[in-house]
Amino acid sequence: MDITQLVVTYSAKSNTRGNSGGGESGTTGSETSNEGNSLDVVFDVLSSSRRRHVLRQLEASGGESTINDLAEHIAAVENDKAVSALSSQERKRVYVSLYQAHLPRMEEVGVVSLDDGTVSVGPNADRVYAHLSQPSEPESTRLPIAYVIHTALSIVALLVGVVWFESFLPVLFALSLSVYAVLAGWQLLTAERR
Image 1 (spheres, one colour):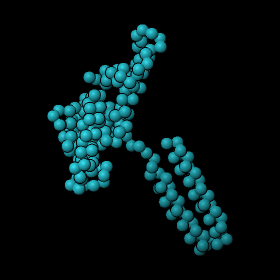
Image 2 (cartoon, one colour):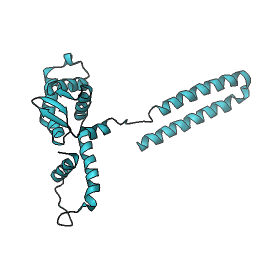
Image 3 (spheres, one colour):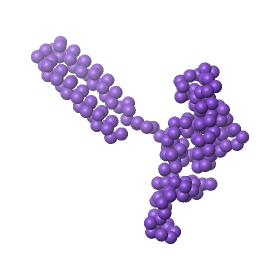
């Protein structure tokens, strides 16, 4: 089943409303809606942290793992423990969740393949991995670096002011605080846009 068939199947299952125009729809609007629906499927798969952990662990293990190994790894991550420190209940909770819900859903859309307790990367996994690999906050280091540079320049300017230009110290201090206020405002604005 390729991604187009997958989208049509997924759309038919999740959309209980019929076409308002009656009859079968042509290709005029269906091609654009298929793209949106395929993204819906991708984001549905990625909406669960356990499914994201499965994908990352499969990638780290060369594309194949067992359900037991995946459950142990995910339980260790979720409980912030070493695998050897996990209780059987912690392992079982994740195993049951993977076995009954997450892995069947991922197999249904072709992201993974299941075979006798072995999980491998499915034919539609590339589309999901493309979205999983994207950085979530590409600008996250720019503002802290700006603060560090500003602090260093402010300290140098204040030291120079103390030595040579004592009468300008209040102006330098006010200028430094103003720049900090601008940087903080910029950070708040960019945080709200995300």
